[in-house]
Image (cartoon, rainbow, N blue to C red):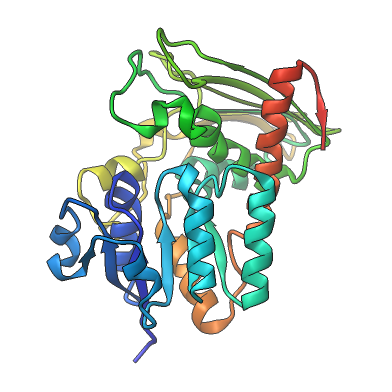
Amino acid sequence: MPKKIKTGLCSYGMSGLVFHGPLLRIHPGFEVTHVLERTKNHSAALYGREVIVRDFNDLISDRALDLIVVNTPDHTHYEMAKAALNAGKHVVVEKPFVQEAAQAEELIALAKQKGLVLTIFQNRRWDSDFLTVRRVIDNGLLGRLVEFESHYDRYRNFIQPGTWKESAENGAGIVYNLGSHLIDQALCLFGKPAGVYADLRIVRTDGEVQDFFDIDLVYPDVKVKLKSSYLVRESGPRFILHGTEGSFLKWGLDPQEDELKKGTLPNAPGWGAEPEAEWGLLNTTLGGLHLKGRVETVPGNYPAFYANLYDVLTAGADLAVKPGEALLAMQVIGAVFESAEKGGNISL
């Protein structure tokens, strides 16, 4: 019988309910034995009442527990991940990892010292649109890529009450929330940038945290721009790519999160597939022929994150989301804030 990885979730808010809970539920190699809910019992619907605990110490003190998922508010990640590692547990930390690069370095060193696996939940590496963009680039369908623009926009013209994500006291804001996804995707495609230039703003009335960014990552051969705003009622393309032979434009957002919010488990037939109306537009020249038309979107695959982690823990596979990559993302985020404050390009 395959080894079961006994797993504890540190919370069952949006990330536990929508992402980690369902993804772990469908993988036969993981057994969720603890879910930390301080006052509620939401996880009972998926895992039963018996898994619910009220104190974080119940997770780190259980010797049978193999893996702890730190999916709590960002400002708690460092202390909880450190405690879990010191207790001898493998750890998954919700993006963007921690809030300072020095904290990331300390946790990486601690995991290495103890021989434990530490990884970060960068699920949007398995977005359908990003997987398609990556394939378009890797296959040279645009010739030499010269311009890459990525958007992750929302329309929320009010301040959502009662959430840590809207409070300046918690070091929250759009860069950590949505920007961490776009930065990670760009680093996957292009590696470490030479520099960072950023414009950060608060655009909503009475907002406390930044809710707009325009970030340029500096590379010698390709222009990379990342943008996000909470005041975009009519969305443009999610991705805009231009190269020496053509262009690729992709509208819409990966469907997996919406399906998970509806309660669909991610092993349903046709999981991650997009309708044809959402396919991206390719206009290019290949082999001397002009081609223009829709490109079928690669299906999204959030379950791949835990499938890889299981293979790492049981068979020594290569980790898909390495902590050093998350450290680089933290360093880029630090440069984003420095650039916005000083008003210029920050070298990395």
